[in-house]
Image 1 (cartoon, one colour):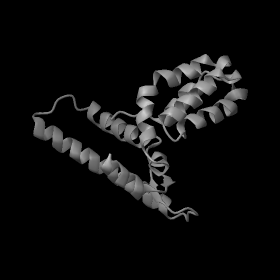
Image 2 (image 1 turned 120 degrees about the vertical axis):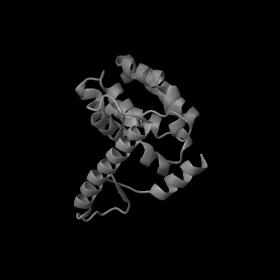
Image 3 (image 1 turned 90 degrees about the horizontal axis):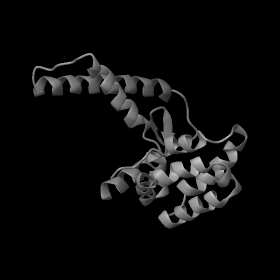
Image 4 (image 1 turned 180 degrees about the vertical axis):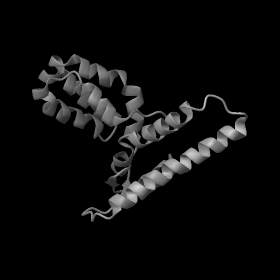
Length: 166
């Protein structure tokens, strides 16, 4: 299953919008990505396209139309799970750190050395993230949830259970 990052999709759509209209466009887009199912989201996108803002910013509509097949899997999850998988920033950050660490190592002697190197890099990345979480964990939060990438996320267990089923 391939699913696009909703945050990046919103940013891409707002890239073509004037500063004064961003709040209105973002409100219209919220109806799309918070829709209960695909048909409701499609109706919200059609409504946005027919609106004054949609006609003023057709490139924003095109961004959503072009990414529709990558967006639709997101709608299969319940709202609690959507809050957890809303963005793929943590995955992208992790992959970027691995790329950055392997960029200097042009050749590995064999597959085993490559795997060992990647394993050590993963441990190092996780140690850095754990230290950052521990540092941020000293602050008292008003909301219950699990600390992920510096943000509190609630509904985490339900999201994991849903993904195990899907």
